[in-house]
Amino acid sequence: MTVSFYTLGCKLNFAETATIGRLFAESGYTRVAFGDPADVVVVNSCTVTAQADKKCRQAIHKAVKTSPHAAVAVVGCFAELKADDIRRIPGVTLVLGNHDKFRIVERLREVIRDPHEEECGIQDTSSFIPAYSLFDRTRSFLKVQDGCDYQCAYCTVPKARGHSRNAPVAKVVALARDIAAQGIREVALTGVNIGDFGRSTGENFLQLLTALNAVDGLERIRTGSVEPNLLTEAIVELTARSAKLAPHFHIPLQSGCNRILALMARRYRRELFAEKLALIRRYIPHAAVGADVIVGFPGETGEDFADTASFIEGLDLSYLHVFVYSERPNTKAAEMHGKVPRHIAEQRSKILIDLSNSKRMQFYRRHIGETLDVLFERREKDGVMTGFTGNYIKTETPCDNTLIGRCIPMTITDVNAAGNATCVRSCRI
Image (tube, rainbow, N blue to C red; front, side, top):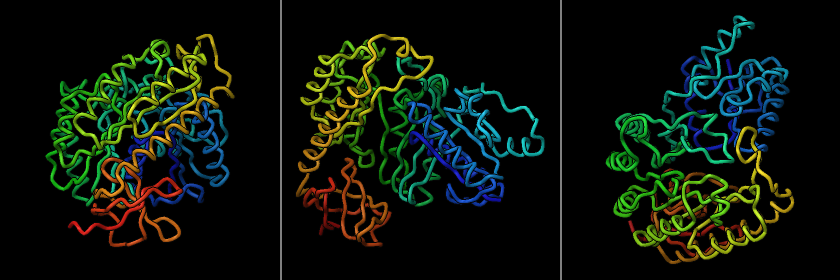
């Protein structure tokens, strides 16, 4: 029996797909590439934007076309919120939400045996299911938290993922040890709102980082996105003195205009974001700091966007992730007035993407001549291989198979036309 997977969305989804893949492997399935004929096709869905919904539907149709006799299972966030819509798509065998997707092998057996078997209800999002993925045998995405208790005006994730919850620190550390035992060099922590870690166990994110920092065998621990109101000085200080915690922070900003932040129901003002960035720069001047920004939110005027662009331009950020607002059903934002025309939102997006590219290049060039440890992950075409420094500089160098999967001291020499930092092996051993 063969199985293929298609994953949309965040790193958390990729971690969970990998765990589901191991469940199939334990049941005797052989994994094949998505698009090749398979006996079972699993689509792990995302619903953060309308584009994600569209891609999910396209993946389902491709699965049905390439494997017309396969059992097609759709799981995850889109399945959680739009189960009935998905069930109406011809060829879909099974629809499971975010909790029940980890029972997929069992449920497929039941449904294949009796096609009239009632599907699991989309109901239980209260438990925490550990998960991790492997990336080119060098990096693992480790799920440490799930769900969110925030109610941002534009977001459906709390509905799809449930309340904030996590495994105990001891359980996460045990998983990290298992990952390290497989020779994985870097663990990237993932979740919906990882800074809220500990809500269900009476612990906190600092305790988790402190415990992971002591795991033998891990060379690098990279944190995911942490809300500005949850990023504490103690976390920054621990990162500054740790040899394992990567000097890389990603902090959602969403808007640089306080009026829009209030409409979004975010839990901070832009001044707090600026304070957190200054705190990081004080402790770790060379850290990479990125931010998420949404443009075209309902009510965002030209003056509001100019306020955002001016605020961001004045920040010592390393890069931006820019998103055009996507209306989601059953959110407060969907009922708001002042819709921004799509073409205007895309123009604003282009401005911020250009600003992000400029800031990234400035950040990279700041490190020319420095020697930094690079974890090489893969070989690229044209005889070039790439990897990342701890502070998230994408580097490239001529292929050398002996470097793959190793943290190697490399000296940054330049920034090329592709926007990557070129580097050569340092004499430092």
